[in-house]
Every structure is written in structure tokens, then in C-alpha cells.
Image 1: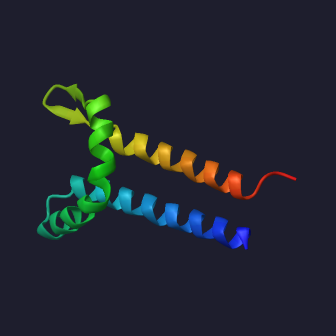
Image 2: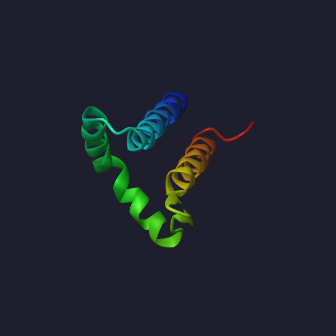
Image 3: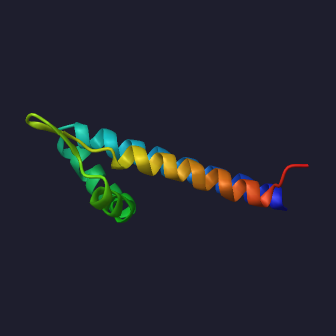
Amino acid sequence: MTIMIARLIHYAFSVYQLGLLAYVVCSWIAHPTARSVRLWLARFYEPLLIPIRRVVPALRTGHTAIDFSPLILLIGLALARGLLISILLPPF
């Protein structure tokens, strides 16, 4: 039973991370469809990205800013997934 729960957690985190990547890619594309997809995905990702942006502001390089908050969120999600799965499935 715990293996099934661990797999469910793994797949849920994977889907969430793929959605975050889609959110980031849509922010780079100037197309109305990408904008609507990004606005829809923002409901799921902005609540986690906003606190990260408060702590780690975007890196300004000339006229461009590089936002590292999605990368930090991806790393945090990977760590959280690993922690949850290791709690459910302790090593032998």
C-alpha cells in the first residue's frame, strides 16, 4: 500500500513540475494562446512563486531580468518529493 502512495506522490510531483516548465515556456512565447495558457497555469504556480520572488529578486542584466524563482521551486519540489518518498519507503 505504501508503494502505491509513494508512486502517487511521485507522479503528482512530476505532473506539477511539468506544468511549471510549461508555465515558464509560455512566459517566453508572445502568442495569445500561450498567454491564455500561462494565465490559467498562474493559478497553480504563482502562490508558490511569489514568496520565493520576495526573498530572491530577479537578476537585472541591462534591459532584461532573469527570474530564478521557477528554478528554486523546481529544486524545492524535487527535495520535497524525495523527502516524502523516503519517509514512506525507508531504506532496508
